[in-house]
Length: 124
Image (cartoon, rainbow, N blue to C red; front, side, top):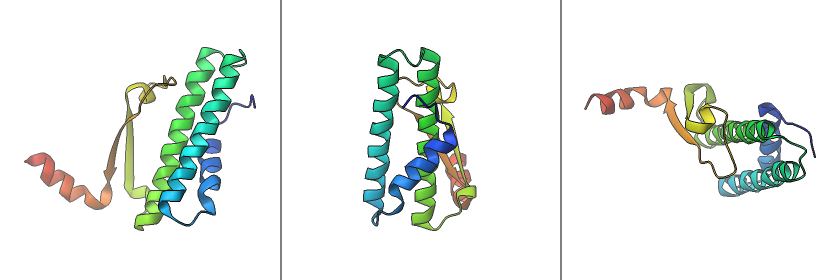
């Protein structure tokens, strides 16, 4: 319970939770359930004094990044797009590794496949 997970562990564990599920919506529900369980684990460690504030921020930020990566993987599978053609920029508290329990995450998604569309949109 007190293990401090890496981004890769959060990503792998969340994808495993969604792996055997058939529909895309149900896969996303599995990711949300995984997230809630991890909030409970991190919050329990925080409440019991097993994590200091820095560890809480770090675990919440790592979880968010791992779940964003997992979501990107699932989205790429659903659309048939190469995940390497995406860029995800984290801004705000996630970009600074300072997430807390009530933080939202500010993300900017860019896809190589649609680069010409973005360029046309930005030039208007």
